[in-house]
Length: 170
Image (tube, rainbow, N blue to C red; front, top):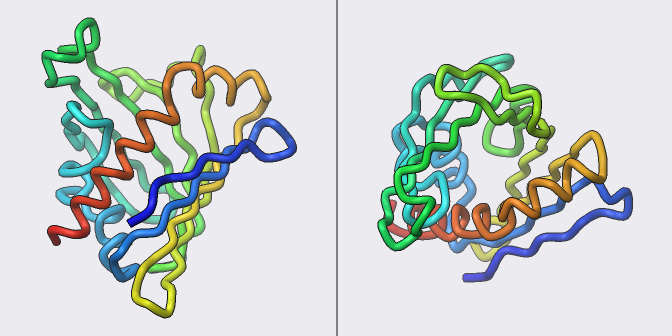
């Protein structure tokens, strides 16, 4: 339907991501809040996600490991990337917040990598489409710059492409 837009806020440490999906918001909510659904679309193209732990509740955690399974991605093939989200301020089918951490496969936080705080909001439009907005804040400009240089924009854009395919098929 539409492509993803990425905007660095005036504070230079907040990233705003917006995309409209041709699906009702309950489908997007379920895609984010059901572990089996998340495992089917989370991660860039060519990567698979294993959900190690999932508790979508206030203070609950989602621990996941992504693995590159695409041989065409060269040095990335076979690489693992683990992360953990800790949920808060859940407003069913409208919004939730989470703090996101880079971790090892056991969920131990990698202090050398920047953590972020995200507010995810879903707004259903009159035509039945849904606008997804994430506002992700980092502690410093350098932290946001670091994840952007790591390819976060391309990776998250591809992740939302996969989410779009997932909700269309659901």
